Image (tube, rainbow, N blue to C red):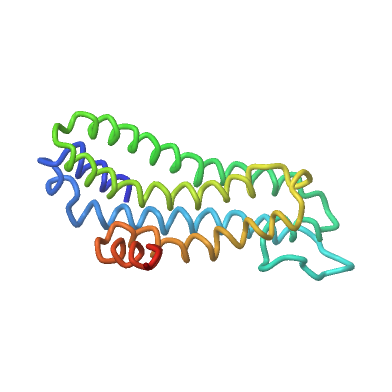
Length: 192
């Protein structure tokens, strides 16, 4: 989505020649295959761990940190592998998204009309808010050392990125709609 916005704002004349059906299929396929491969690698490593004794996971779902706490073997390799996968498949895409938005902001500054700048910025701000909410919680959970984050905080942050972000997305994206804006204004405006 960030690449699409980047092309639409920074290279509008070349948009349709670059963002063709082949490019769209490649981007979708790449995101699905890379996510699947990352999880296969991590799951294969997790299968080599041994578990014995208490086997109740104190979490909302079977997440990595609570599962590693149940293991009776050394989890250092899996933790390092998880860190590398998080950097490769979360930090790198986030940096690419941020760099595309930096280019977009520089392009927006050069737009002469104020309404054009506002319209372009409002289109991008919704996506940027959603991306920052999602990636921010993922970085806190998966890049922070597991010993330093509490189980309760981990649960709350996991809830935010699994339920909160998808729940907030329609609200974030609908705030650009004029009908929604007028409805919110009438709802919060005091009646005489």
